[in-house]
Image (tube, rainbow, N blue to C red; front, top):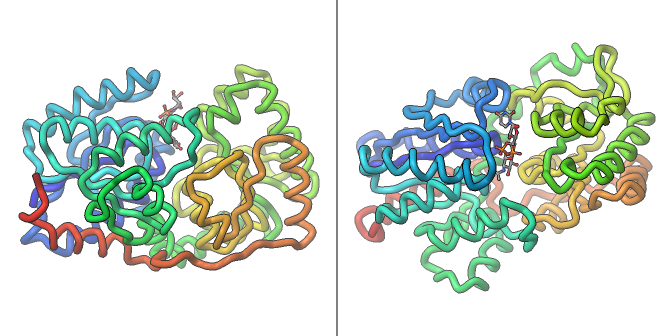
Length: 372
Ligand code: UD1
């Protein structure tokens, strides 16, 4: 079976790493190639993750770079079509919900190539999120829908997707987290920054809904600056967030230099460094998707600065609380957590480090049977 695994943006790398490892167990049955679309290209947004996760270098880089949604998606469509025509894979594996996920799915299906979507069925029901559009379109086209929890399966069934296409396998992102947890714990970053376990919070913030409107962004930063008076917040800043902060003249909220204090910004961190910080954080604040799951796996309280989540299992079973992006709500919920109302939750079913192995076994079992 010839498989092309696709990565494009930062949250894809830790999902594909365990899949490659699981595929390597079957060298006689699986030949695989890694295609990087180049959606993310900065060293710290891309290359650093290959090193941390021990991933092979991409066999092919499409180097599409940044652009509007249409431009970026269209560039992947055109470049990936050439790769598929040349390599003639039996299957394309896509993960997550970024523009590269959708573009490669569409390309492959139009060429009659089977597609497996890992992390299928997540729904925020918020069509203003570009990722929601990517998820819906990717799922309707994919042959194999690998899900992380029962909510995802219910969403897909409600959309009329046949049960045979849906496979509940667990969470590949948590495979990676469990594998690297001990290694991350041994780093000395906390020590170098002068941070004590439970003595700081971490933050990620990059969603257009939070950083593209000046008054929304400023309101969030005011809340964060207030929380940071009590507990320093380590903020590895996403390039688009930095750009918007500069454009809006909001950089005065940020602290730099040592010692860590207030709302302290740093360049995007590597996978191991950020895991190292998150595992001993008193609180994580985020608008990312994956971090909601990682904090649930680590049993660290997480405040999600969004009005909705495509990952409700992290609120129902894990340590996640949805707080939206209004200043008063962020402050109220942060105070609750800092006063001891700490949700720790439990690990959802099959988030056990074996999801990628299940996926590859499922693909091999279907080989020859289900591929179009
Ligand atoms: C993308 C994903 C989002 C994911 C996020 C994680 C889509 C629609 N969005 O958002 O789901 O949560 O990645 O980071 O696919 N930039 C750089 N260097 C880079 C990459 C981006 O400076 O290596 C800057 C550019 O100004 C670019 C902007 O960030 O225009 C946005 O990048 P893009 O890939 O379009 O979306 P993200 O906001 O990163």
